[in-house]
Image (cartoon, rainbow, N blue to C red; front, side):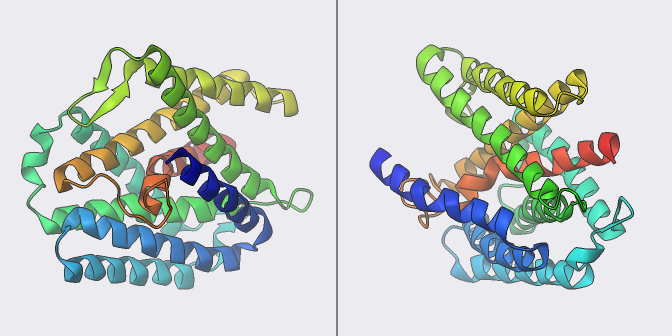
Length: 285
């Protein structure tokens, strides 16, 4: 399993960063659409793991909505004089509300599942609220740039991913080494409080790195943003675990050998990206 994970990572990481830094936003948006269609098909299994028609119906719905967003808001219109396009802004704000609701649902699980576990409509809506704001946030950050720094937006995306990966890695190793107290056993029995704290501590390395490269940043704000993003990533991870537990599936898919599905790789990012983007708009724009 570990060998397979490493082999997949060897080709996946250069591919991801090649797309983020190498593709213009207008091409990146369509490439990203393909990735999210795979994630949508995987979410379809959460809606109904036995019905292919339901899974493809949800995939087509997401495809139509994301295509409409790409056509309605071209890459060069996402930002205008430092202001985000109102359609994109509305989607991200809705995403922020969704992740607050999702956090409540995770905290109160399994009680919270009683009102949605048998409803295809609600699980479909939750899938849209999970995937679409993430798509829009990723494009919005990627589209940011200046004459002097054309890779500014791509660098922001990279930093969010770095925070998420640092949180995940720190949580994994701290949990393996020190983990004793279960974080949310009803949602994800393997996760521990010590693991979460280890993940948050690891993110402080990112803060130190950013302060070293860009010392003019306000350290208090930077720490707060990093911690909020890290906590949001944990909620994204727990949220997907909750939905998979109800659907009785271990991995969302098998497309990434050793890693599971696309949804398993981006679950933390689905929450971290909208939360970071909202904070960025509030404090840096």
